[in-house]
Amino acid sequence: MNFALQKTLELLIIIAIGFFLQKKIAKQDLKGIKEIILCVALPATIFVALLKIELKGSLLIFPLLALAFNFIMLFASKYLLTATLPIGETAKKRTLLMLLPSLAPGLSCFPFIVVYLGDDSLALAALSDVGNKIFVLILLYILAMRWHRLATANANQKITTKSKLKGLLLSLLNEPINMVIVIGLVLLGFGISITSLPKFLQNTVLSLTSLMTPLVLLFIGMAVRIKSGEFGVILSMLVRRAGLTFCLSAIFVYAFPSLTPALILLLIVFPQSSCSFWPFAHMNAINSMEENSNYQHTTFDTNFAVNILACSLPFS
Image (cartoon, rainbow, N blue to C red; front, side, top):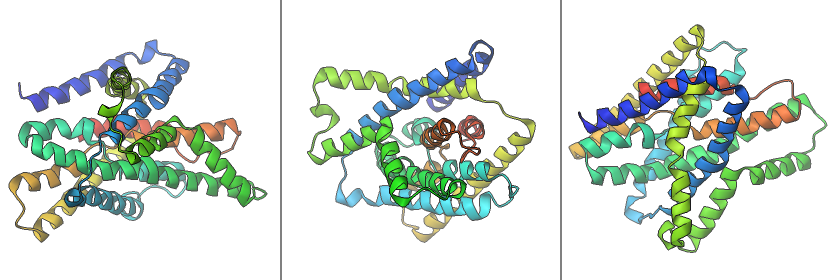
C-alpha cells in the first residue's frame, strides 16, 4: 500500500477509535485528557519544534510566505468565508476566524510531501511551518485575548486599563504553552538546540512529544459531537477555504513561472493542510478563564471548534 495512503488511514483509525470510546469516557475524563494535551504533550512538542529551528538568511522567504498566507486567510475568513453566518452567532464566527487561517502540516501534509516530493521539499515545508507557528502560537493568542478583553470591557465598564494589562500578563504567564515558548526562545537566543541538552532531558522531552499525535486524534474522536445543521456549515467553510487556497497558490505560481515542479507542488499542497489544534488551545484557555469568572457569555464555541478539527483532518 502507498505510504501516504497508509499514513492517512492510520490517523483516521485513531480518530475512529476515539469516536467508539465516547460512551465509555465521562466528560470529566475528557477534561483530564485535554489537560494532558494542553499542559504536557503540546508544550513538549512546541519546545522541540523551537529548538530545532535553524534559520538561514536565504531561506527566510519560506516562513515569511507562510506568515503572509496566514494573514491573507485571516482577512479572507473575516470578510468572505464567514459572511454567510447569522449575525447572532458571534462565538462561532470568532472560532472560525481562529481556525480557518491556521495550518497543521505535520499531521495532514508532511506524510504526503515526504512520499511524493522527497526530503528536500519536506525540509522547505518544515521551514515554512516556522512562519505558521509564529502566527498560530503568538499572533492568534494575542487576537484571542483582545477579543476576550473587549467582551470583558463591554460586560464590566469598571475594569481599568491597569487591571486589564495585569490580567493579560498573568494569563500569559500561567499558560504552560507560553512558558515553554519563552524558555525555548531564550535557549535559542543563546545558541542552544535540542541536541545541546543532556541526553536524558532530550529523551524525556521527545517521549512526551510522541504522545501528541495519538492523544489529539483520540481526543477529537471522543469529543466530537457534530449536529446535522453544523455539519453543513463546517463542510461549506472547509470547501471555501480549500478553494480560496487553491486560487492563492495559482496566482503565485502564475506570477513566478520559472519555479520547479517540486516547488509548485509544495506551494499547492502546503496551504491545503488541515486546521491547527493550537488555536483550540488558546480558545479553551480563555473559555476556562470565563467559566471561573462566571461570565454570562463565552468568547468562543469550543465544541464547535472540536467539530471543525474533526472534519478538517480527513477533508484535508
